[in-house]
Image (cartoon, rainbow, N blue to C red; front, side, top):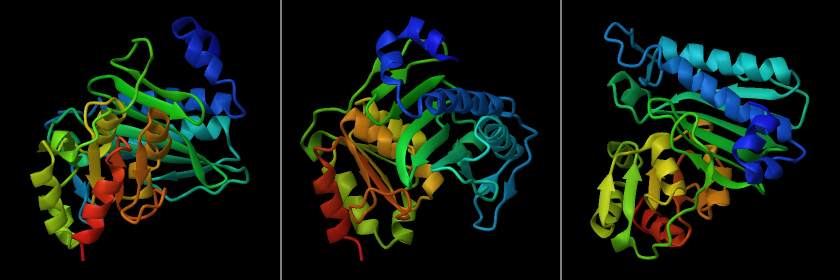
Length: 282
């Protein structure tokens, strides 16, 4: 993809990408798509070997190869940028930019053949998340945002980009509440808070990981909560939800991907969700 191609598809978005980091934003979209496509080589492969990492989370050759591909594509173009990812150690750079890569967010879904796993890439500048993309390889959906561009969604590979925004719902009893793994709330001594959210919200589902945040950004859900997460799981969510009109913080209300947990909402419900987590978690 180049700016000319994007201009023919969506002139409004192309105009918005004329920023100081324009080419990095195009690289972000291209790389996220390429790395995500690579994972499909192994999706629903009955012979896929599944290993366990030191924290007992699963990892596969698909995770490692997709991240290696992303690192190569980014590193070839921006050798002075820092690169951080889930599967390999950080490569330090000398520029003000850091790329954060999660090749498969939702590896448990991936190895079970569930199509709602995602590939996530974020860009930080001077320590602040300025752009991010969520790509769902099995469906072709992608959400992309950068500071000042708005939030953009395409329903499948090759589709045109359309602006997306969070929902306008302002009551929890109307809200869709999503999470990645409910039992992790108990590990955080937040089982009571989880039950309160489940009881209060209209419906709860575990369409979590990156897909849950995509749901919030496109207005199809209102609340996404992770009890345990790493920077590569949620760095992309900060600019995406901000540009969609929503909000991402950790459970202490800080806008950071490094708080160890996360809340993504449509903004209108953020304080109420945060209060439940603070009041009913030890």
